[in-house]
Length: 326
Figure 1 (cartoon, rainbow, N blue to C red):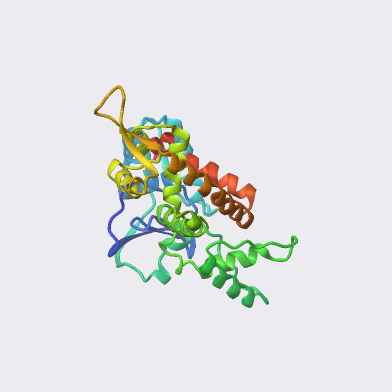
Figure 2 (figure 1 turned 90 degrees about the vertical axis):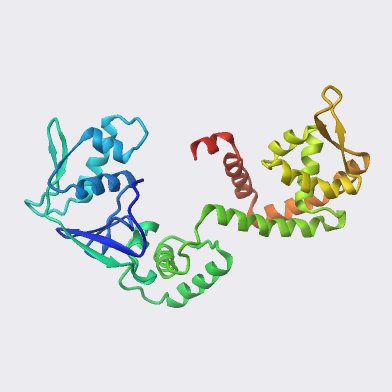
């Protein structure tokens, strides 16, 4: 994605009925955001920044897909999408032309203005960022329902709207989404959401495991030890995606309580293996019964099908393939 400047002041570029904000990565037609894919937006940005000039195919590919080999057919696909987005239906209106054998050129007159960053309530990026359909101008008799759902969504973060077809569920959901855009600004970070969910779930599992004297994180360590046998410190850390220093800190209380031992490897005395003791195996067996209870509560509250789907998605997130694609 092309870098488009800072947040304190921004350049606004207008052409025809369109208004382009490079820093916010927003294109609007009148008051309505234009849905445009990231690559198509980058192409538009490159062409508008060189209005009246012919930008060659190679230059476009290098700027829009830096460091990546892409066939020209991909460029043509995104150009077609861009043309469709800029089609106003007005006879004679031209914005983008193809210069055979050379490249593309943005040919419409443009005007530019530097403006201060707007208040979040009027930020151009909102609708484009969240890709919401336009809010309905009029909705009858649903104000209380919308208000109630807004309160529930802020408190619970996940709300399902169910009912027979034709009752206006989509209308209500859309009104709620627009009403909460400002409240949820910046609150959709995937990493932060996962960490918050993990903290909440950890506390719930900790409460169920309390009679065993183990925390959920300690039970996870014993589970891995039970499954792996006598892994090395590095092997155990890798299996849990932890670094060695964090692993040593986590093992400390378990070693102190006699549940785990560190033993020198029989073949290489430089290597230490982590061993579950007899006391640790007994503790694991006790905690396993409690863990099954916690697991059952989770699936009852969350739904077994959704829980299975969640585990599948989380398995993907912890895979080497996802890390390589990130």
